[in-house]
Amino acid sequence: MTPQFFLPALGQLGGLIATLFAVAMIVMHITFAVCISRDAERLQNQGRLGAMLPPFAWALAALALGLVAVAFYWLCHYSRFSRPAPKE
Image 1 (cartoon, rainbow, N blue to C red):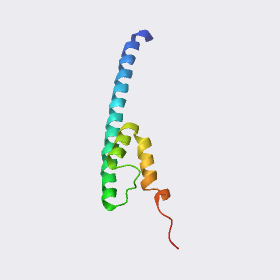
Image 2 (cartoon, one colour):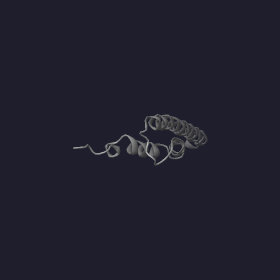
Image 3 (tube, rainbow, N blue to C red):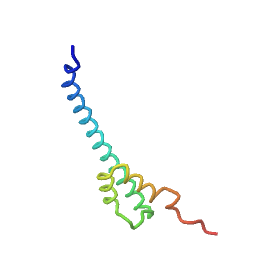
Image 4 (spheres, rainbow, N blue to C red):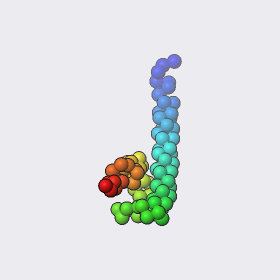
């Protein structure tokens, strides 16, 4: 058997892997969008959501940008940078 025999099978396997990766990315982006939307609504009901973006805009950003939007959302709402300075 020559290595050329396996080349078409490797091409099909690569296409399958790319398809599975794309589906996983779509599922991940949708999951991020749903989770951020729910959390942003919860923060808005508590009066803790800033005036920067409404919950649906955060969800759209997570849907389009994925982990980048999740990291920015966390930075804006949960990191130490988002907390007000302590009163002395």
